[in-house]
Image 1 (cartoon, rainbow, N blue to C red):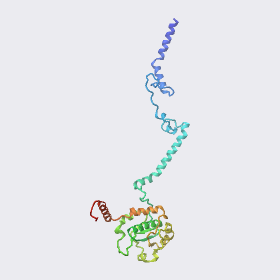
Image 2: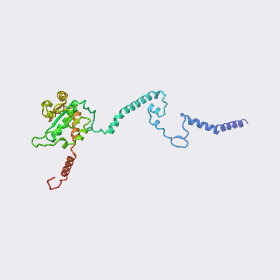
Image 3: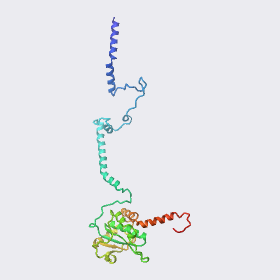
Image 4: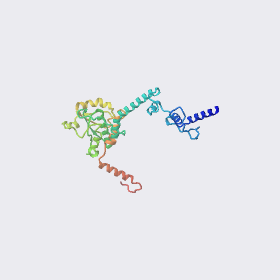
Length: 305
């Protein structure tokens, strides 16, 4: 009889432990607890299913502030608090730097000033702020005249002066009457350099002694040494220009050096020679035609172009 009662009690306990409510409560507890293994199987599970791979942040440990930003760690924890503030400070500095550099970057993209020889323009000096006017005769052949024009732009920049459009000096033998505007595009020349040097086409109307500019020694700067430095013009030529307002510089062949002037001045001379001094369309067309004929003369017995 005692054994029968014992067996009855054991069977009731077994039924109670295997009731649906009990099983649901145990499943909910095991699923919500991070300290209990998953009941969905693993390497050692009864169903033999493979264990699921852990999340990315567990396989690749992330810094505490990053984990806090991704809601993987409480930012109020001591390990993440200091690093979290440092990360926010770094992000704020980067945002401020981007905000400061954005206008200049935008202007660079819009204006397209990426080339070294393009116009790194500065504020153009107005007529009231100029040091005075300089006038030069470009002497020699076409190559020497180009060099003189480049040097004239350079010294005008050095002395903050206004350049009167250079005159091509007439050769005493050939009596060539060619003018600047007969060879070069004057509008392009002035517009290209308008952010570097102020250039005018002719002597100002308020200057009534134009003949004196060509003949009088009072209006002429002489005795400039060959390959003079930029400082020489500042010390010796600029005071006379400020005094007389308009001065002629002659002779002007090789009157500015290369190694004794700032790099930006040499860069300006290159831009004048290769960009500002543009031949008129008729001259460029004739040059292209001659170059094409020379390229196509291969195997041609005709010696003439």
